[in-house]
Length: 448
Image 1 (spheres, rainbow, N blue to C red):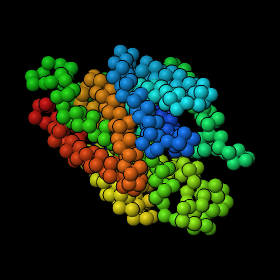
Image 2: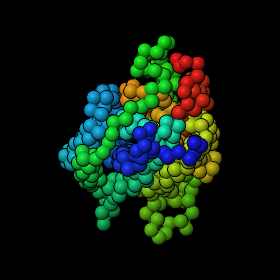
Image 3: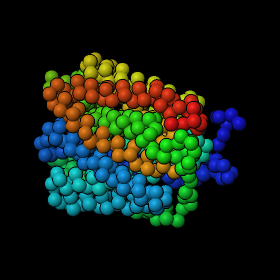
Image 4: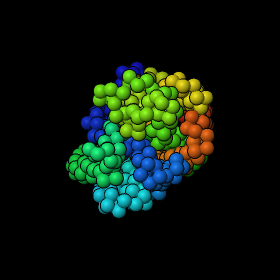
């Protein structure tokens, strides 16, 4: 049967798991929404607590620290509890983190908010460790990258609405023009807590079969020359490195988007300040208009719309072309985009920020699918390490913030440029590393 004629969700026993896939995909929307709010939170704390760019990056650090600390425990529990048990555990932990924001708002201390961010991230770790590899086994292996990108498209939808909620509750003002963000920050997180409790009940009674991943490298048997260690497979090892650097680039660009848009966008004509977008602008330093924090937070949703468009179009492209080659090409385009932002070329550079959102869209799920290719039952363990690599989002944004403090946000894009260069290298070299022509194909030369 032709590659593009097979059902995306058919498994060998004849069942079609489209309904299961749809239910699991709802989890991706959840953590996209949570991540979208995180990405517009930095500027709120910079203003309310008078923090530098580098210090406000502690928000990102706390977020990704949760991933780092919980990735291996999540992988261990997922192996023992199965996909359903891991998902329910993650949802309940997200609920605890969301509810913590209620007392954190009354404490009004930076550490309390960071703790809430870390708790939610710990719950999301369970969901990512389970849901990402699960989407890759819900149908033919050659469409693994397509399925995970489709599921991650829901992540993109959540990322669109996250900044909108952040703009409403983090940057709101009362009738006197006084900021109300410190009092209302807890509201969207409490809403998330209620939602995930409902989802946990749904998953408790849903049909979520435990399906074993394809063991292309014979890790689960005693075949001659087979290695039982996932670390003996370079396509997995470099996937961990590529994911670390990709998430570092993504977190840096997302978290400092508002800073870039409020400081680096060219002067805006006064005529733009009218109608429903009037509050998006404020007087600039040179007499013309500039974007306000609230306007930039809403504009972040346009960036995530580009991200979502990249996910949906990428899912179709990946069904037709080899995922590793698409990953390599998209990484190369982002190297060029970041270079043009670095050069401070006015509106061209601003446009390239949005182009970067589009072309980074497929990277996380595609690296994930390529990294766990052929690892069989050890895919859950491998996914835990790839999720742990998300820690890159905690470390390098602080470097990007430090560069931004010294040289401006445009120059700070040199940091993600280097990250995207490695992602491109991984994509173009994946076939050699895995000894497979494409995901779904058996390794040549008897494996590693």
